Image 1 (cartoon, rainbow, N blue to C red):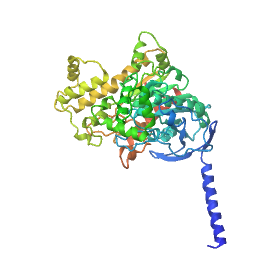
Image 2 (cartoon, one colour):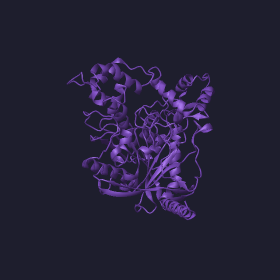
Image 3 (tube, rainbow, N blue to C red):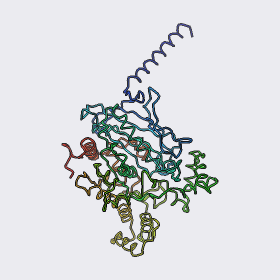
Length: 531
């Protein structure tokens, strides 16, 4: 190649580089006290309507919880490299993929949040209302990436924020020591809310109108955040979709016993709390996940292997159910704060459908082939779920018989699968939801709404049998987020286009949710009245 052609080639490459750099630099960017943040503009279509939303992805809100920070409460990330490239999602927090939805991750540097900003005029001069979503997944899986907020942000003219928090062992180990106090995942959520308070104004958000919402254990997390009085001022509204703190997730004093099981499996010294903690701090996240998966497949250890919110003496002073029951006699600070928060709470039509896959023990099996007999109900499932609701207590035989009578298919006692769904849904979701809303609404100043989401959608988030005639657990997420998430990646559903009636349903739900965020009331000029 001659020098002339070489120089020309270099100039062309340099010009292309400048064009690319300029195009990237002229994308949406925000100057914050932490540094300049560069994002993307996402263009798309919802039911024939074109939209555009600015999105800022993978913003770290806490230091990577690695090394000496593993098992400790999160520390603010601080200043960002400036300009910060926020055009891709951050890492998913370490988790196993037992549901086979492509969410496996082993990287502890995962405390990121994502911000979706409408490119439309603010509804109030001080800024857009803000909605912060906490994902579900049994405190063991999930991420903010699974529920992109661009359609909801555009449709409702609100800012949507999704977050990651630590999960499982890394998120909830409680050894009762200063280096592992427990509830790290809940403190992650709180730190993300503090980040929003400090910085969302730079994105055009109104820090005085923040709604937290979540699904399943994300909703459990939302209700737990609602009884921590130190959160006062971080949010004003809450939406709990299929989950409240009345659900039984353990709420034990600590997680020392499952930690000891794991350290023994790792051939570590496990005679003292310090030796167990040292072992679990030094083992890689990959190895920890591998051993936890093995223990979870062993029927002798699976029931004990729970790393969930615990009574840490600060975030939770006691079992939250006891905290709410106390308020019937004397109003405590936790319930006083709860009733300051405006609440939407609800359940789906057949929440127990999610438990059918546990019957088979195989999450890849065909749900239509799963059978539950009347004998199974009486001898296996009624005692098992009652035992989960009342751990450590002896359940009288007459109680089991009464429950069995209530949940018997008298038309065909050999086919009890629908009764199984009703029983597990009532016990696990419906009764706890009603109990929580009763506590919240038992005050003349509390503003409280309740829903039951029943539509049988064409596609489900979880494996669902064709005979299930109402919404399964998680089915409302599609309509709530305007069908924005990747059905093929997370539910193995290809080429899904919702029917027209589902788009209409989605618009109604997004209308209620975003009215609530903006007005503190789900009712607006374009929605049917919800008392």
